[in-house]
Length: 75
Length: 382
Image 1: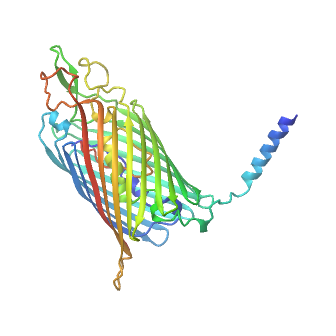
Image 2 (image 1 turned 90 degrees about the horizontal axis):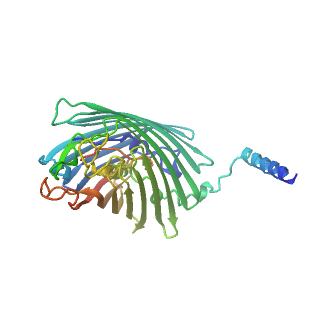
Image 3 (image 1 turned 120 degrees about the horizontal axis):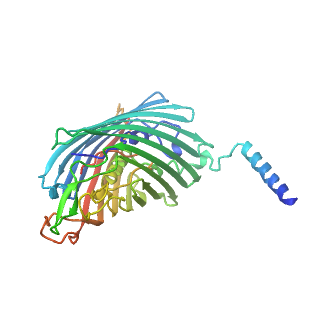
């Protein structure tokens, strides 16, 4: 008897959580470090795409590098 | 010369996606780059110019012009008996971005041309900021058509049709830690091999002969990656990433990398990186087949052989203000990235000094190559 109640309680808690808006746990005024240029994920597009291109030409794998890529095989 | 091309348009689509600072279109800027690659008997160098301009706060356009000037006497060229060749490849891209609320819509087109290879790629993507801008989710689709010719056989013509599906999530984990997850599936149909390369097989006399490679006409790949970037207490950044790759040709690859970024003296940013890559060979790859017609598909393309790549990179960037009166430029930066790459092939053998009849086939030394490549570019913000 206790187990179904527990499941019901957990489901109710989950539903209540799902309905409530998710509070950002890092506030906008706490994002100073993340906004620093050294935290840029892609780096400069012009050079990041070149780097991916060189690896793609020499190796068999491709993709999932976060957007950059392309170019010639230059075999 | 044959080239394996893919989705340069994605680079342009990625410009606006700067993780924690998304939902605002990136600033107007121009980049003028010189790139140079040298290694394995190949030199590739040329310029790249990228200009990005906003029109109002919700529309931006990016254009890129990129050139490869290639001079090659690679191991494949030497072993085939051909002489060093030179060629030029030009690539033009245009991308448009439209920002509405927290959603960015992007579309791009890329055209690449060289004497025996033409490629057109169209891309669409959408990205959405959510959960208080802590999460950015993006979806992308590309479609490409490559038209392939041969400089030694004017009658040869074929093509590749390609589709590319991408999903990405960038997630702020703490005030100092960013993460990014990417998945990409690529399907290709058509002529997926290089018309200038050969496989080899043992012949009746105990030596070896060369024959044409035969590749499957379809290939589907899946790649998934995770990246973490951490802001260190002394204002520096440490990034780690891992990618898993698998495809229907039987290639399984792992990529791992680490990068450290350190600002110095107010205007300088230095970086150092190390990247390790390893792959298995494709199911139909062999350095030496037992006989002609041994199996349906036969390849000796070194890029599909088992190999390990290690790359060390160093970078320096200097930012300078532009303060003269009336200047429409805001600031600029000069950037230099140099890389040293070592590729070790565990089954692909070096036949340059061993034409047929000069050594027992399969006992030639294994091939390895070292390459140096660099980018130098000036960036101007306006």
